[in-house]
Length: 404
Image 1: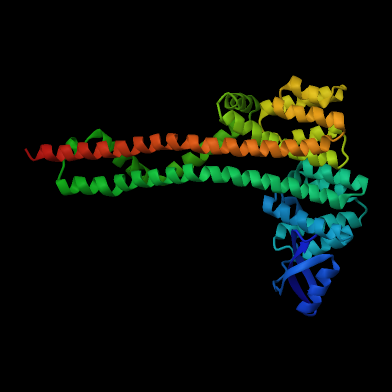
Image 2: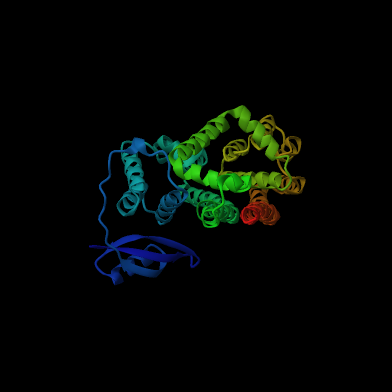
């Protein structure tokens, strides 16, 4: 039998992808329809299956796209009532990434030997994280593991969306820095040396502004290896310093005092917080356990401390809305929705509404930050270009001076 790759619609709106074995495209299309999907594209795809190596211990992480692929494949198959072992076997056979095949094979073997899926997943806590595993454990206990994978997929796509927004916001400053660096190097290695050589300007008549540009470029090109090692060592040192809790705590506190930056950090943390809180609560997890899972997504130590305070108050019997007021974790406008949810019994819906509201606020803040970057970058561009122009005119003046 040949293997066919298919794209189809689930419930006429959600696109699903996968592989299926069949004798010909027509049979493959019929089998896809048999899964309850509406096929939109089917074609035969051949590739050599890489052997699964015994290197489970070497896998310490998966990219977001890999976790999304793994989760979406399992979610589609479990929703179609395919047993977990068969679903993992299918993922193992059809995944293009060796790491996914290794994980699928290892999980399948653990389940065959008597472990539950969530127990087998515990050995990959660094790969999938406590939120993913916690939701799987709750879903398995309630018998709704297929729904849990749908929730996990929503959380992963949320993280991917936030990552894409941050990268998009960083593109313009990064390009600006690269252009300025290129201008600096071109002037230091080509323009100024050619001008000095052509005008026969003596070393003593070269302005210090020009010497700085030329000297810096000469040093970087001559000792590029030392410069690279120093740069890498500096980055490594900063990472090690950042890992010190006291330093990170201090920096996190200072960031929250900067206008716009404070809003950006708080909303990007709360966006993930309420997304996880929503799916955890709707999965049937208690509010305290849901808060614990949601807290694990927070990266800012100050905000995390506020969230831990809220969880402690709820554990003691305090209402969630009151705990948020006392900890100052949630802006008052969103806490009103928490109060409404508690009174109406629709707390899960309120968590979802808050997550959507925070996303809208985050987009506004990111737009404001982008606009704030523009004048700051313009000033930086003006300083660098102005320095180059001044250096050039000083060099030109030195050339004129040598003529008289």
